[in-house]
Length: 214
Image (cartoon, rainbow, N blue to C red; front, side, top):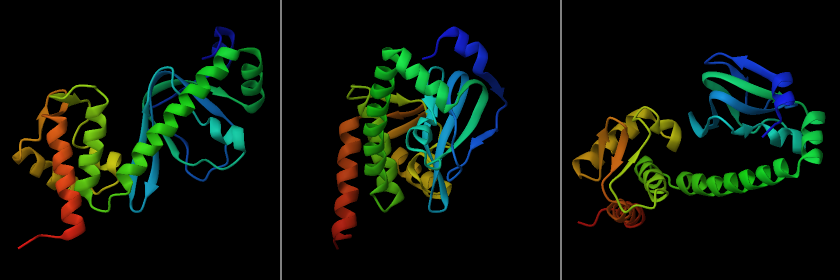
């Protein structure tokens, strides 16, 4: 996203665990990940929900520069990282000097809006089971395969992804495994068939609406 001279001038290193900014903080810089990983999270009730896991080439924090408002989420270094730290003046110069940068940013923001729609769909469900199943289904559908699809996520990651408590997620995951809808693999969690997971979600929604029928 940035030219080499800019990269050399503005690169900083941050160890794992560094909180770059917190939700509600004033913001005067944006960041571009050169190496390592950064997680973006937001407090949802009593649960810290992971909104994004960003790697090389990804950028974040630009909205506080664009709208001059407090940070809308928290950014934490998940893996030792080298980041470009860009102030508003440099950011403005980059956009004016390089149309490709502006186009890439617009495309990325459009992708984020779509991802926000998916996250809203997850959070609209009141119960943890529906939120988890919706999230797994969304991720599996992105592969374009009917199944099986292995998602690069661990059971420990799931509570933050769906905004639920760890005990709730563990209970739902166990139910899904017993029903052979998902299984734990070395590379993550495998969804056996997307269609079956969708049918199970429909069952949960009907149960939530009408209750158990005697």
